[in-house]
Length: 119
Image: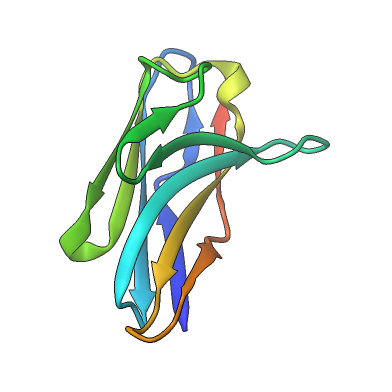
C-alpha cells in the first residue's frame, strides 16, 4: 500500500557531499515522522536524523547533516556534508504513516541506498 523509494547514494571522497531523497507513495492519509537510519554489516541500524514535531540528529552527524521535508510531496531529504569514511553505510528512509482516516499509524521502510565514503 505504501512505498518509500530512496535515491542519491553513491561513492564520494572524504570531505565531499551527497543528498539523499526519499518519497512516499501509495495510500496515504497523513505522514507523521520521517527519518533516516543507517546500518553497517554486523551492527544495529541506527538513527541518523528524524523530523517530526521537531528534528533530532545523532551526535556523530550533528552540524554536518541536515534533514528536511516536503510535506506536499511526502518526501524527506538528507543533505550530508563533510562526509567521513565512518559515514559509510546503507541508509534507510523511514516514515510513520496513517494510511486512511480510520486506521492507526504504521511504520514503513525503504529498501536502502548505499553511501560509500572513500578516497
